[in-house]
Image (tube, rainbow, N blue to C red; front, side):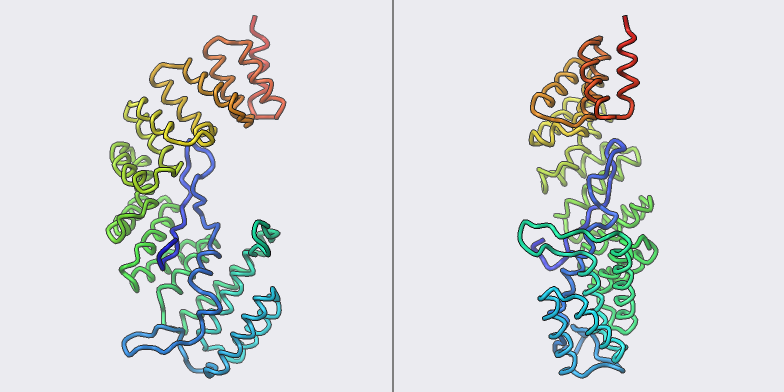
Length: 372
């Protein structure tokens, strides 16, 4: 997150039908992104140039400069003291008095975003999560303020992006697309805008539209690993594993430790009948990730393709010896042991899984115990 643009949010791409690796989204970190763009401190008016406005507009029914500075200063102090209710009262009263003041609308929207995503009071201490219903209500109120700020004008790309992120979090994907499209039009040099637009199209399974926006994103910034990874996932979904591998070569070069890229490489190599390369991709992961359930399943697929079931079970046994305690892994290992005719070992593994109420474990155990 080193540049002036928000870090791309990663959309959820399923792996083996399991949980999405990219919380992606669809948007779990919208407030962080919005706070990156809009803080109460940077909403103070600045001198505008002669070409285009660089700060929120001073329009009709607006506060004068000194009034805005006083209002925002009061709100800032309240936020700093964690007096969010006071800040809300101050800003809502100001918006009611000056309904056409863009700076105040943006400040109030930013406040609602902050309230929807509490920050830790001290380093290392996570804040108490707020109920989803309350969070969504705050996000809706924030979105209303950003939309009104855009209606007042000027329509700035950062404001469009913030509104689009909130719309996506609220599952209003049509609005999210409209806002991200507008942001891309207003700032054609920012690769993150078409990237986020692609994520929304991906969420709607409009893969060709997503791919087109991703192509724009990487043309603007070839170092966007997320974009290359998304294009790889689309290629896999569309039955083109070789193309996926080309994209993944770029993604892994940029982010060699990213688990999602290695998992996709393993899937793609297995699809093209190269199990050894699939295993090599998985072996590039640190042990903790190499022995995750998804990694073990992908390794099992590759080893099954290579007709090496003994090695698949050995890999599971190695994972269990290393301390893996996921009961689902025990059930998967039991299945491999049964395939190899190791009924006693399969029963031990299935029993552990059954004790943890893993679906299917009791059925497997009953079948094993019924064998002569």
